[in-house]
Image (tube, rainbow, N blue to C red; front, side, top):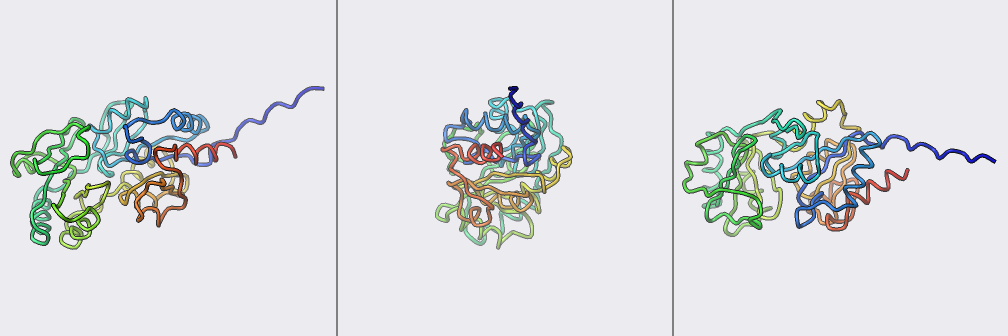
Length: 276
């Protein structure tokens, strides 16, 4: 008696998988687990495209793209940059008006007092300059010293990072929006990381631009994230999945909560969808 051939797996339920990096796709040591890599490859083999959507600028994203062997698009700089990894070139880049940035900083400091600064300059080779009083997370990402505030305005920039000696990131984010929300967009993207961006810029804007290039609609998109800067991306995508380690604000708007970034949370969701 002949055996029936095994059914051919159908297409993956989503055409686009958008993943944040830090706290989401990456483990604390900046690596991607073999289980998660396998799940992403399997989803892509069944018709999905993997799109990285990160707050990191392109220079800080390149090592991860190389680690993954990623040849597709990456949305970097909180949506400011769309980068083609396979072609090694920037497709679009939005910069922060430096006069507005100067005015926004003045307003925020008038409200809360002196701030510590870092600045991300535009371009594939754009440096991140960090003032001495700015508290870097772990020093693992390359940066250069910011010696003088006027350096902030010397070249085109994508965003500014701000810190306060006493206010935590959520409180500083609220204060910055109240003082300068009509000049710049303000987002909280990690512990001690509050960013000033071009007004109206978000991960959703960059994701939408990249999706159009891929011919994919929001209704066909699955998104993973962990911080408040991922909220616009979740609002745009059909299904937003927050990691178990996610900020409460993101968890409150997520369609689903998965395991943490240390426990292969992305793979947990993808494996369930692959098994359908």
